Structure formats: structure tokens, C-alpha cells
Amino acid sequence: MITLNTHYAELKDSYLFYRIAQKVSAYLREHPDTHLYRMGIGDVSLPLCGAVIRALHEAVDDQADKARFHGYMPECGAPFLREAIADHYARRGVTLAPDEVFVSSGASDELGDILDLFDCSSTALVIEPAYPAYVDANVLAGRRILHLSSGEENGFLPEPDERLCADLIYICSPNNPTGAVFGRDKLQRWVDYANHRGAVILFDAAYEAFIEDPALPHSIFELDGARTCAIEICSLSKTAGFTGTRLGYTVIPKELERGGLRPNDMWVRNRTTKTNGVSYILQKGGAAVFTPEGQRQVRENIQVYKANAKMLTDALDALGVWYCGGKNAPYIWMKCPEGMSSWAFFDRLLNEAQVIGTPGEGFGACGEGYFRFSTFGSPEDTKEAAARIRKLFAGMGK
Image 1 (cartoon, rainbow, N blue to C red):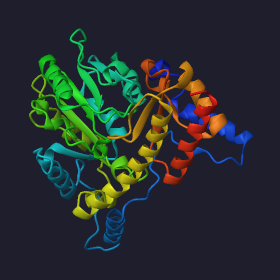
Image 2 (cartoon, helix red, strand yellow; image 1 turned 90 degrees about the horizontal axis):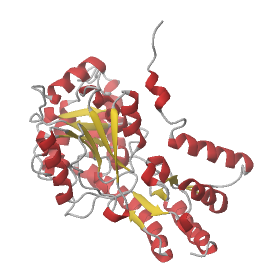
Image 3 (cartoon, rainbow, N blue to C red; image 1 turned 60 degrees about the vertical axis):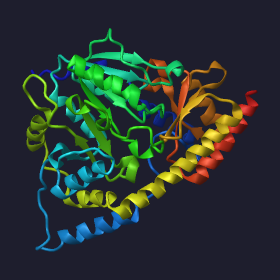
Image 4 (cartoon, helix red, strand yellow; image 1 turned 90 degrees about the vertical axis):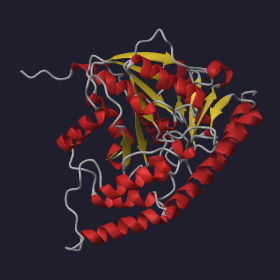
């Protein structure tokens, strides 16, 4: 008889966002006509920008013309998109060869698939609070996981702990869920730590487009020595509204080598074995993001979400609530009032204010007592949610 992957039994009973969906569904069954203000899951509310839509339509037309039709695409990405992404990095002073860029169907898929490069005996280090999929993907692989907690004392941006011996290091900056962003000095210490240990950093840069402080790095490859210890995984989901369109990319420098093997070469072999490439239509749409027109339109959309963040942070500032994030990131991480647990605050916010956020406990043990708001809702809903949060806190004596 076949043996199934018994590591599934080690996962938590329910995924964070599934539990939220169950609670919301239960509330709506009791209050079917209620409008809810959804500041929880980080799904965008603005449509794709005009440059992308035009490129998608042109690509569809290409598929209807025998002379311009495209079948299977190169497994590692279309040359025109790989070159556009490399040029995008070059404008920030980071030099990449196009064949160091691998086009994917999104960062979430890639964060799981990339683990194929590493033996299951390797140890993963997850800085918490963290995106739950980092932990779950390694649990399913049977990999040992080290949890490095962070907190208010270090702005949820911890430094390496020399006592921990890790092979894989997850860093997300700007961070999901906290919205905290690593400065150059702290991030450099992680790069130095990884090179010294012979470890590899998996750098999740899904939210880099929200950084507005010029002193903060958008890419780990802005740091000295990162090309010998890091893989960067990026997404157009939040940058350009591709949550339902699905497109991302991974950067694997050729200088990265461990045990005589190069992950860049290995990933070429992996992609040619396991994928048939991302569709031509999506890659044409993605390439439009990196044009001058596309960049301008994407920035305009991001400014809408930043205005949402300001409405929420203004409310928290007025209430004297501790938080981080919101300025260089699309997430706001606040401390729950009156010592409440994060799920208790979720229930109260839902039942008394009809606002949905995300309990911090779902991002790791050190997230207990904190709460995440996403700023991807509509401006109208965000404005009303901020007002309702103020009213709720006033009623609690804050």
C-alpha cells in the first residue's frame, strides 16, 4: 500500500484565512444584509492599470493571428519579460543578467516550489511574526524549523542570533504582517551571517514597491555580498494588482553556489522539468508593468493604498495605539487594546464595528496580542472603517 505524506498531520487544523472566512460566513448568516469593511486579506481593490489591459488585449489578438500566435513559452520566462525585469533592477543600480531572472505564476507558488533546491535535512529559520506559508511549506517537507521571535523592542526587525545554526533563512521586507522594513545596516548583518554560515536567504520582496524612504533597500541585491547568499522572490500581485492574474519572478544569481552546485543551473533544470512556462498573454501584460507608462500608472494605484494607510494610522495615532508599518508597506500592525487576545479583538471588531482584520496569533506565537490591517480596500470602506475603529476604541475607554 502506498504511504502518503504524513507531515500533513503536523499542520495546524485550519489555515489562518480559512478560519477567518468561517467566522465571517457565520456572522453573515446571522446578519445577511450587513456590509462588512474588509481590512483583512491583502487582496487589491483597484483594477489592472490601462497599460497592462491594453497589452493583454494585444496579446489576445496575437493569439488569434497565425503569424503572431504563440504556443508553449520558454519554461524560465519569455526573453522580453526577463530583459524588462533586469532593466527595472538596473534603474535602481542592481545589475542582473536576464538569465538570472525566472518568471513564475506568483510568489506564493514560488516560495513553495523553490524548496526543491534544498535537501530536507536542511534547517529553516523563520523570523516571526511571519506569513504562515513559510512554516507550512517546510512542515510538509519534514524540515526542521527554527523560530526567531521579534517584538516591539526591536521594531519587529531582529538581528541574527549567532547561537542559531540555520541553512535557509526567510526574510520578508517590507514585512507581512508587520509592515516593518529592514534598513541597510540590519539587512547587511543578515547577509554577512548567511555568507559566514554558508546559508541561503530566501528574500520575499513582494511589497518592495511600497517603499518610499530612499534610505531603505528595495532588493537584497543592493547589499554587498548578497549575490553569494540570496534568492529574491517577487510578485506583481500587490505591485500591479495581479492577485487574480498571477505573475511573479525569482532572481537567482549565478555566483550563488553551495557544495559545488549552482541553484541557478538547478532551477533551470527544475523549471524545464516541472513547468511549461507562464502563458504568453500574462507575460505580455507583465512586461507592460515595467514600461514608463506602466510604472506611472502602478505608482498612482499604490498612492491610493497609501492614502488608505494614512486614514487608518491617523485613527490609531489619535487613539494613542502602538503600531508599526503603514508608511513603507501596505500593512499596519497594531497592539490589541486592553491586553485582549488577537482573536478576541477580531471577534469584537467584527461584531461591534463590522470591520475585518487579521489576528496576529495566526502569524506565530509572538503575534499574539497584535492585529494586522490591510490597506488594499476601497478608500470609501477604509474611511468608514477608520471611523468605526475610533468609535469602538472610544467605547472601550481608550
